Image 1 (cartoon, rainbow, N blue to C red):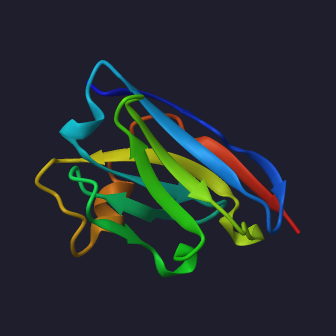
Image 2 (image 1 turned 45 degrees about the vertical axis):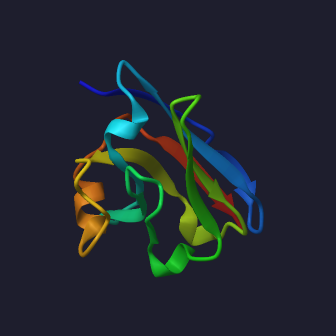
Amino acid sequence: QVQVTESGGGSVQEGGSLRLSCTFGGSTLNDYSMGWFRQRPGKEREGVACMSWTGTIKRYIDSVKGRFTISRDQARNTLYLQMNDLKSEDTANYFCASLPRDDYCAGSWGQRISSSPLGQGTQVTVSS
């Protein structure tokens, strides 16, 4: 069973930045395709970003394109989500998620990401 430690959330003002981290324990990051989803208050889960196990394919929802970047550090066995120019509508609990290695973030990747949480999430609050 994959175990992760999520961190990096916090409270910032609009326009600010945060970097979320998801560190794997007991398994190797490269064994999976990975992603992040969020759950905003009163809303359904929403896939935010997806990255193939190769690291070469990255997908984002339209509302975060150009502002968020998904990446990984293989040596640290850690997945990241760099979030810049944060907006109040980004306020949510953010979760990292894994997909099978043969999932290359095609089609309805957001739904698949949202169904595969690994940890308890990290809260991001953006104030205007």
